[in-house]
Length: 259
Ligand code: NAP
Image 1: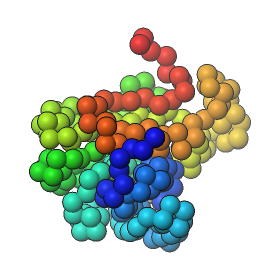
Image 2: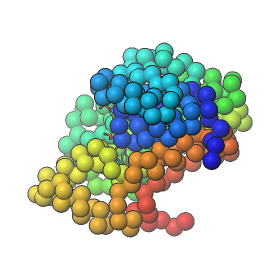
Image 3: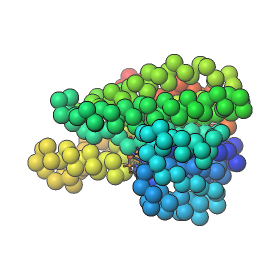
Image 4: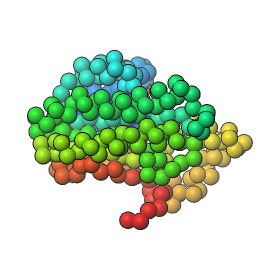
């Protein structure tokens, strides 16, 4: 299916690996020009080189912390008028209410609430003026289904969902959509680090913790980041202008709900 995105300009935040990279690759396959962001310069540049070579598109890496105002300014300087914005950042640390430090709270809100809010604020009016815009926020299934130890993630991301719900109607009439993707368990480094934490709590190995979780999943496997990338690309497609304000859970049926 041609998603009608050839030649569009795209910012993907937090995209040197994992879900952000998968979104970048799915969009690159559609012929967009990309600005990719992550903090570690070498890994980001390698990803940018690989995506440019694989898909024959322009990829500009911007090494910066998307949770900082300076970092966001650097990303926006490389792409001041994006057609598509994919908001993403590293997830907050697992833990319990009494264990998160002041700094944990500051970082979680900076990366998972302030960063996407500021990026949306920077691009929204321009998208509306040009008559096309697609914004996708990568959040988490935890917004809908509580996960023990992920309360800080839930707190920051629920704030973003609340904010977005108030913005959706402003510019949908100008073909600008905003949607959230809520990943369940996907096979990325983030998943492994979360299960390393959980394994330590339970006195088992990370491999045992991962195997136990996998066995619980109705799909019998973790999600492949490529599957999330394809969903993201579809939400960004030319014909998806009537889908806005949606929070789409992608979890292989892991979280039962009344449909
Ligand atoms: P990942 O594999 O660890 O990749 C994270 C990416 O984000 C890396 O490229 C990392 O590069 C970049 N990054 C992290 N913090 C950043 C920052 N402040 N500024 C710029 N770039 C930053 O993680 P993932 O699994 O793809 O997860 C992506 C998001 O989805 C996270 O918020 C995660 O909590 C959420 N999520 C994931 C799952 C899952 O199962 N994987 C489930 C639910 C929610 P640098 O470290 O070099 O910056």
